[in-house]
Length: 161
Image 1 (tube, rainbow, N blue to C red):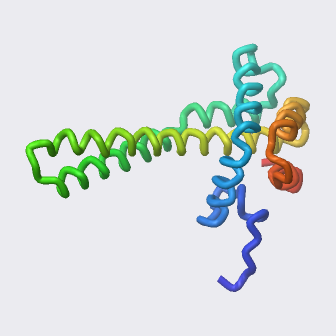
Image 2: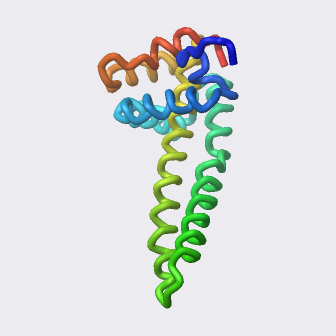
């Protein structure tokens, strides 16, 4: 591609490339405390009826709850790890080896994909510029984020998604 890569422009688009996904993963790991703070507020609001949320934010919650990506990714990678380990170790302990490699692989990919999905959902909820609840989420993110985090600046540059 002849265009210059700008991670801030592709980081949060629905069809972002691998570099944009890496940007999101990097910020997700660095700002994990901020993610937990924002998700706590989102869950509190959901449990109290969601009156502070915009219709778009409610739609995002519904979409997030229906997201099967973590389960699918974990199942595929866990199964692949179990099969690969079973094929590579031809002993009487082959089944045990499959479990030893398959289960941790499943758990790891499920955790990563779940956190990534939560992070993506939280960012999109904060990007609702006409929402007081989004401002509350941004304030909580800012208080808990790592120093120098570029995420809030990026969100401010988005148009409502």
